Each structure stands twice: as structure tokens, then as C-alpha cells.
Image (cartoon, rainbow, N blue to C red):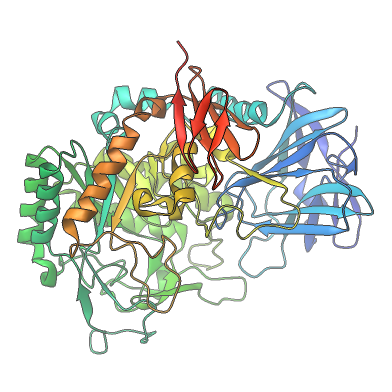
Length: 573
């Protein structure tokens, strides 16, 4: 079989086929598309017809709660197209072929799933016209991993995991817990983030200086953090990592990349050091929040020379938060800034999983500054360096999302993706949502499934069940809601100091629920079954099944009575 890409004019460009570890490696030489504006890759490989047995499995992007299947149904013409996939592979199961298709992330790409006149295709698209993407600079490389025709999405997920394990790109969580005490502790402990202070977000002052800086809201002082720790101890929460957010000057998103001096309105550095030692003496762990992607003009170390630029020479202004317009820093400069500043923060004495925001939930920016040009592939390398540096410096590393390039150095993901609701933001060709990412990566790292499952014990029943069924580690957030007139992506229900005892009780309830299944953090999730009438079953490698009722009515299944949105844990000896 020959394999082709097509440029914007429909010109056919042929891949060279070789072998890599017994699999097909397709290479499209950059000389073939050096002047192309857009490439469509491998549409014929996935071609199927309405009525065929099988499906596609597509990875979610940063704004969805779940990956999805597309079945080859009779339907009107339809198209689904999206960018920023968190996994750089997709699955095809059709008559005569079952495989996964793995794209090297040296270019940014998007997926198009098309049904036209009863013919289905999946096509990765690389667009060189966009001003914030790369020029053609490297070959395009794609692996095709063929599986038995009888295989399905669980085998596809296992194939991806096993390839990355064999190539030493990732390692099992069990090995991390054996090697690092902080990981053994964290797999049994909730991450409790505490947003201490912030200015209005989005800010009415888009270009801030010390003279026009808006006031900062103080939500939680360092002394208040000690009160939270005391309440956790009093209510019997045995382990926890308290993560300080907005501890630095100006609060959260206050003056990045400037962190010092520690915000005086929260108590300053003396109180911060006192709090770190106090929390550690209670037997808990404590960590801090930093960020290197975003920068604000108000920072005393802000430099336009650090900001990434697009092909037209414009600075990358992406986001509008507490300090006004955020400017993305070139990945090369992020690395330089971090290694200069993070060691000073580490000297404060934290001992938990250090958090660096954003870096794992976005594709690294392409930078076209003549001073520090950086391609997508180079950006990934510098992002990985930064993550690894912090992992070694602090003993553990966590971040916001779970892009697959980040997994080698990511110990915990605050949420795998953003999302409004399971099945919300649905795509026209998404027939069924499933936890495909979890089937690949559960047992590799710790994670919370989606932003709405933060504070899962105070969320609606569907979110609570999703947290359990998708294998999450309990993650809680004091003052997760802080945006004014804008979306609070972790929901409107919150933990607060004003309701301290009730908030800590929600943490304790979560850990009591988690106690039933915490050992499964060390196991791979090997299957996810959609049974009948909303019954879903997560299967683990030791035979344990978590049976959930994803419906608003009580159900009977396999000898079990399940209340609406309830679950049971079935152990196999």
C-alpha cells in the first residue's frame, strides 16, 4: 500500500515507507512540501463506508472531558475538526485494518473527521499559513502500529502505553513511588490548592504598572493556611499536600515572571517560611505555584526580548488575567528564566509536588524572533527540560494539563483537560465519549480527570461519578472561583475559609471514598465497558471492576443494586 499527503492544490505527495521496531514508519521529506501552505495527511488509510463494522478513536483536546468514538453509521454529511489534541495518535478499526496512527509532534496539527456521501475519513492537517505556527523545517514522520483485527480501543491504548514504556519515554507509577518518597506519599494524599490573593481577573487595566496596579483581594493569609492545616488534622485527614497559589507579589497572576518579594499583604516571607515549617511539622507536605509561560509588563524583570513573536513580528499576546494582557514567553527564554529563579523559591523549604502552571496543557509556542527562534519541536525539548529541572530540584513536579509530550516528567496533572460537562461541547461526529487517555496513562502518573471534578465531593452526582470511574486522585481547591464576569472553569461550587469546617469535611469525605480504591492508582486501567442502561465498568489489571450507574435512576446489574450515579467496587481474588 502506498501512503500519500496532499497539498492545498490537491497535489499528491508520497511518503517513504521504512520499518521501526517492526512497525511501519512513514516519512514525508520536507523538500516535497517546502513551499506548501497546507498538508492533508493519509486520508485513504482511514477510509471506511457507512454500514462498515468498526470505528475511529479520537483523542480529546484541552477543552473536552473525554476522547470519543466515531461509528460508521448512515448519517447526513458531517465534519468535525479540532486542534490541540492532547495525544498525538488516533485509532482506526475497520474491515481489514486495526491500527493506531502515531504522529511525531514536530509540527502543530489538527484533526478532521469527515463523513461525505457515506464515506468516512480521518485526516491530520498541518497548516503552514497560520502566523503562529512553523514554516516547513523538518520531515513529517508517522508510525502505523497494526493490531489484530479483533482488537479494539483497549488494545489500542495498551499499544501506545507499551511503546512508550519500551522506549523508556515513560515509567510506571509504581517505580516512581519506589524511587521517590514524595510520590509514595502523594498517591495516597489529596492535593489541596489554596488561592491566597488575586487582583480582579480579567483586569480592567490591561497594561499595568506599579502606579496603576489595581488592588489585590486577600482571601487567605499564611496564618490562615495554618488554620486550614489545623482543621485537616482535627478532622482526621492523614495526608495532604497544601499547595500555595498566589503567594508571590501581586497574588495569583500578579506580576509573573516576578515572584519576590513574597506578598506582604499575606504576611510576607517570614510568615511564609513559618507556615511551610508548621505544615511539615504536622506531617503534611507543602508546595508552591509558579509559571513561566505568561509574563506581564508590570513585572520588574519583564522584557520584550523574552516574548515570543509570530511570523509577522507581532508579540504573542494570549490571555487576559489579573495583571492585564499576558504575553507568552519563548520556550527557550522560559527555560533560562526558570533555572535562574526556581532555586531561590526552592530555598523556602517546600517538600511537596511543585506546580508550574500552563506548561503541560498547551502546545509550546513557535517563536519567530530573530534573537531566539524556536520551532515546535525545540519548544517541546525546552519545556521538557524545564519540567525535569523542577522535578529534580523539588523532588516532584505537577502542572495543569496532560499533553503527551509532558508525561515523561509529569508526576501529577491538576486536570487532564478543561470541560463544561461530559458530552457538552460535543462534536457532530462524536458518537460516544470514553476515557481513552485514562486507558493509556492510568498507572503512569497521578491526575484529576477534568476541571469540573476538582472538589468532586461538592459537585453534582455525575461529576462525582466521573471522578471515580476515570481513576482520579482527589484534588481540592480553596477559592477555585476567582474570575469576574468570566468563566470559572473549575465550577461555581467552592471551598472557602468562611466555611472552613464544612470545606475540610468535604476533603475528609473525599478521602474516605478514595480509601476504597487508592491501591488502584498503581494499576493500569485495562478496559472500559459500556454495558446497559447507563452502566459503565472500569476494569483494572488485577481484575478489579468499578461498576458505575451513569444514570439518574437506580439500576440492577450483575447481582448489584446501584443507586443513581452510584458505584460499587468488585474485587477479584
